Image 1 (cartoon, rainbow, N blue to C red):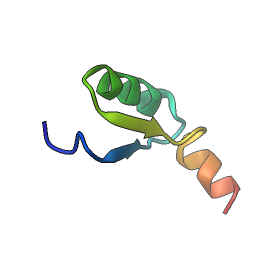
Image 2: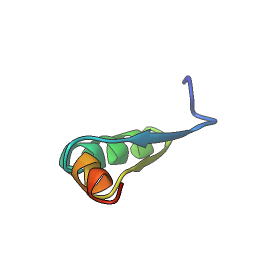
Image 3: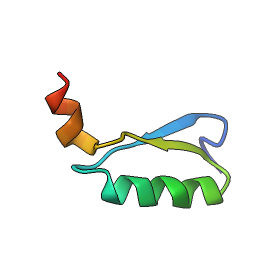
Image 4: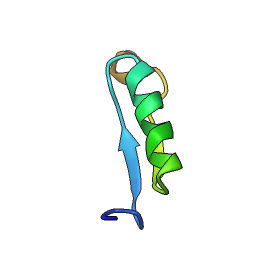
Length: 46
């Protein structure tokens, strides 16, 4: 029940796990997003 009033951002290396985790959290009532492309994409754009 904690953090249901917050936006949660989930990140992993390539987005595969974080997109699944984010979907799981949304189904549980959380406001969750993931970083498209994960850390690999993040570092490319830095």
